[in-house]
Image 1 (tube, one colour):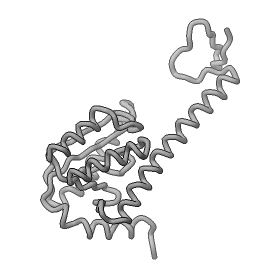
Image 2 (tube, rainbow, N blue to C red; image 1 turned 90 degrees about the vertical axis):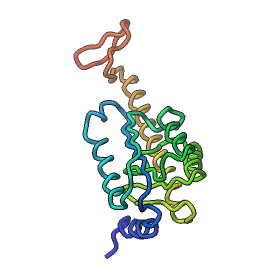
Image 3 (cartoon, rainbow, N blue to C red; image 1 turned 135 degrees about the vertical axis):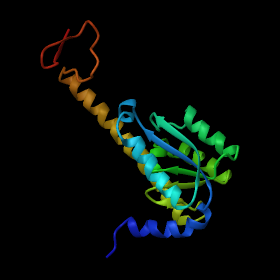
Image 4 (cartoon, one colour; image 1 turned 60 degrees about the vertical axis):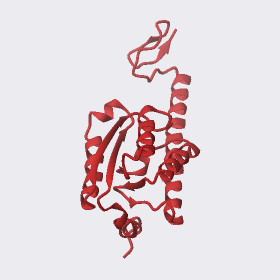
Length: 193
């Protein structure tokens, strides 16, 4: 019996096992909003990757917790990751899933990944294990995940725009904040001026 995804990730762990032994790990966790940060997601992500790190006798040298969107990588915490990579402060970048790292434009995301690669950083996810930058199948998986993560966020944003546009056409205010003072709302949040 084949289980999609499971059989694919097992060889990745076997191939990358030697490279992960006794390495220095930087663990990155991310949620998009501060509201999500109040929930269990950051802890769950961190625990997943730390369990994997312990299996390989890795050393935790840092944790970066993000409460921000990953639709652009030109942000302070992403720059910290790259700076630490350039300064050889860690060997393995551990994240729970690749889309927790980036949903940015694929070209921007690949520039980020290239910097990790050029600085000898091993990319490792709790969901798929370590990626081998020089393995065409792993590289394909990285690029596919990056494109799909970006495509997903674009769909979400497009849906939001359509929802706002539709509500405004119906003269219905759906945002949580109050409208400008010249717009009045009835009990069902329909607008009138």
